[in-house]
Length: 259
Image (tube, rainbow, N blue to C red; front, side, top):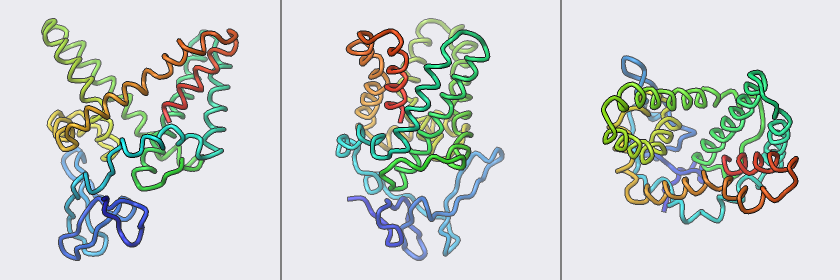
């Protein structure tokens, strides 16, 4: 069973203090950065001011398959989040004409949706089982993570283009397999530590995968299903709707599965 802290009994405790023996949750831990590029995140007990040790992941987070039934109703657990998905989908369907300006508007809408999804991910990691409120503070606080994610994708692509491609087909295949297996781990590190350097560090990426264990492959398979769900829904249902409704419904499905 996950360990909790008495001050926030609904939130999992991620760390132990070696001096006062208290367990601490993400809401109460004291964070500091270290390293030449501020790439390290250190965690300290706010009371004792000493570095804490991490709990075993099995004591922090229940296996995700025990909560599958809650995944798909999560966006519907908050009326503002449902309205948020609807409004962004309407705007995306409205800006359908070609052109650089409209492409930029759709990109901004995508960034807003992903930013809110990151905020939701952080909120659930801290024990909140409903989507966070829609506010400028919630969106702007997580906007940096979205741009770091874009830079992460760009760095992987440039490395592929200028280093892997000249090396030959074998290394291309090896690199694509590595990226497919490692991307969830990279994003997890990016979200938790907010460090692009750590997310691109193969040692940390592989280490995170091994810490999670075999269930990481199950999680990877589940994420692939979620990624392909909008396309499957389009093939089964959406393509049979009137033309003017197809883009709107597909955007709703994409935003729903993103959240």
